[in-house]
Image (cartoon, rainbow, N blue to C red; front, side, top):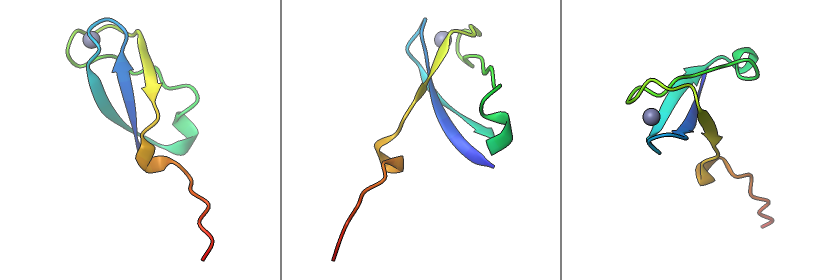
Length: 54
Ligand SMILES: [Zn+2]
């Protein structure tokens, strides 16, 4: 289980959905605020892979 952020294309609200990795590709989350399905994934900077060499 992992949490993914999505942003509503209608009201711009960002919300988090918990999905299994295997569910990620086919997931069709809807906005909890306005109910539309027009959402797009938000890639949080927290998930950015950094290559740090010591
Ligand atoms: Zn919305």
